[in-house]
Length: 372
Image (spheres, rainbow, N blue to C red):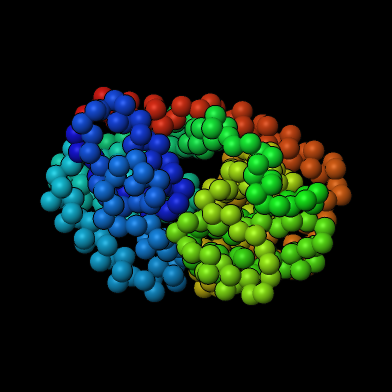
């Protein structure tokens, strides 16, 4: 069978790639085409658009690139009609993917949607669209199944895909000592800097995160988790003359050896928690985008760890609070407040239990193939 697959971000690329791998086990003649990144490409997907040209986030940022977004939508619709897939598999990226879901449904193509749009936070009117145009929605947060049940939509929750990805990493885990030798950190504890995966995120977050390097470079070895959609020069322009190490496409190895992490809000906060690494979460957006968001987003927290646990497990430093003084104060807590760290890691264990067990990608793949 033929599948048209769309992921618009690094995390979605990873999640989709594992589903593709498992579909191939169930459907030996499976063919894949669509929008995605390097992980999907490695699994044999013919990419017609790469995620490095898709990842816009924020009201203002999307508006600035509206011509490109609309062009990609138009191209995608025509490409789907030409390809004539048996199904489309859409991962996250709701502003784009829900429009494609409507289009595919209109043309009698089966629609499977992976990772729920955050309708529980904002745009609840999207629930009507989901009910009408999506054949099956696979959610990845434990509370989402109950949310959709209240809206008379039966969704599937098989667990969180990060459990699959981390389980796979641990099965093929490189020697920790070898990675440490590669970093050449000596005896200094490692602080992981995770500034995000989109260009505008990195440009906003990395300048704030590296202020800690200026203060603590003699005490810690700071290492940036780079994403391979950008070259090293992109990061070096932001770093100036600071000699900070960057490791590309190696976030799990980095978290596996880190003492602390400073994380841009997103999937990485949950990954950091699942590696049991104490963290602070920070986020800074375009002022107008943030201003609009404060009026329409109806949740207390932005990090997945805090959202799932329904309380502040990790400190969130947002917008104006994401500054040198606040970052330094929080790092001091991570350094010296043992009770604070113990409580955070106890909450991490509770979080891990809430998420269930590995096997999400395999179960989703079996469901899709059986449905077709």
